Length: 449
Ligand code: CTP
Image (cartoon, rainbow, N blue to C red; front, side, top):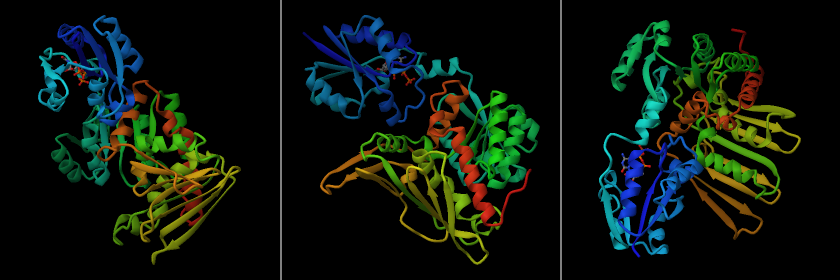
């Protein structure tokens, strides 16, 4: 008996898939089809799969060509599958020609000609209208955003708006997008905006974007007053618009995994969270010279508050801030200490003091530690009383990591609302509340707009 194996995502099952399976089956007597899991697709950067694993398996099964269906969950699995199942022929479509030649050490490799003019990518794009996003701001983060959008299908960058038109023009030329100096014209051409301007302007742009009926993805800290956050979320909800705070860590797979393990009981009940993020900035930078909106906490505090709020919740009993100030009075280092019913937390951040960036979650049975850059979580360890026992976890974090938040933002717009739990509206409101308390303590309270 000749055994054949093939693999694929088989998303939005189409004729190309059908013809591939038909020919794969014809190569032998017994066909095994490996269907990729969501986790594996995420890991290899395929972030746009629409159908669930169950649907994709069901569609493969319905063709009647597969004698057995297995799941593909990890890189390197193919070699062990071929050995385990005593496979004679490994086959995939010709878009993979050459890429699986290494399998020739284990079995025969056949590349079947790909069916022309059809692919899951094409169908995804036909099914969904491409969401056009406009960028407000032309700084460092906006420059990171554009190439990341290109990696998420179903969304494209239409253009950029900046009141400084020269800067918008340069940005637009660099990324080959439109530039606008007229806000109405900008809003007319887009479905959603990404706001990447200094914090103090967020409010004004969120307001105008929502009023123009646009979905909003806004850099952190989204706003600096609790009431503003509540009002914007309410307005967005009432008008069927999506408003998301862009804290990339919240959406990255490694961080999600860390939270899952922390909450699983593996380290017992969580008692203490200690988190630190420092990034030395130039003394002349906006972050260290803007005496009203600059400083360490407004710049980095959102990252540090994220694990605290995710693990202990929104209801803290007490919060205090201890601050080291630079000559101009701005905080170059801040420690926020939070007391909860169930534990305590410290969140430290600095632009003018360097410290060890680390996320530590301590429980009654053990602790989790992720070193810097824990905010782009790729690796963490779980330690126990017995120092010899250490569990190690790693997860991929691709590129700048913005693609994860962009994908979740898009899914929410498209009604595939599976990601809201990653950073809820309530959590963003608490972040704004804490920012507000901090600025009040610093006598830099933010007025009503
Ligand atoms: N395939 C094919 N002809 C097509 C599309 C896919 O023969 N027109 C084959 C692929 O080469 C692969 C299998 O079907 O062996 C599963 O491919 P998959 O990646 O799931 O499908 P695509 O349509 O290529 O998906 P995407 O656009 O997401 O890459």
